[in-house]
Image (cartoon, rainbow, N blue to C red):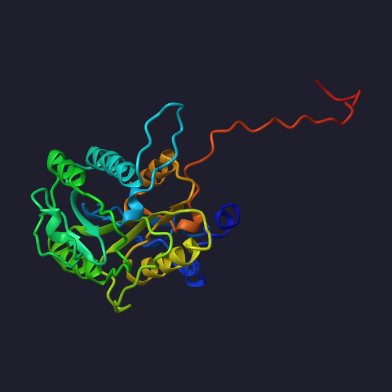
Length: 297
């Protein structure tokens, strides 16, 4: 996927470069100085309600690469669950007031509850099973582990219902001085997601992690990626991040999910994101020019 690997990260459309970090600030005069300086007004970041939507298409059962000799292979879904558990623990360590809920994406989106009978959901219609947002770690992990993929392809993926649910929940979050974020973990290499959503309604922030196969005759990860970027730009209130990987490496997934720990109200635009940084030591450049005999030591 070397060709696609270089092309896909060019994720943002031209208007994205015009977006700026939304913060409260003003220009103030500083006594004794000839110019003004920018000061950031103190404000408290809102606690988050985070809806994690996991793709349960059969492509989520594709095995990730094994990095250790003799190691047991994990499916994309298994790796996603482990990454989500890491994410929830880290977010609650940062702020115990964050809350989480889960949805699954088949042909459309539906709520996930521990008591769901998955055999009744094979038609992939939206099921109105109410699962409250929770900050209880055990309840969140139990709901996460209860997500199960299906054996057959789901076909098209419609994000409209997911956006409707998110918008409805976002209004309730705002009434409690909270913000809502949706994290979509998508696994289909040949099915671009679709949606019908007005561009004027930006009530929540959308983040995306996209795991895909290498490009080939039967798939089109670049087309899918472009559709995900369009959806993110279309609905996000704050700066939404999108990450992709066709390498099948669990450590890359974990790296992406850790980057999503960043609070939407405190983000720079993704094009300016410089983390995570490489830990590789840079070689020291040695000056090969002849030394000056008269140079002071």
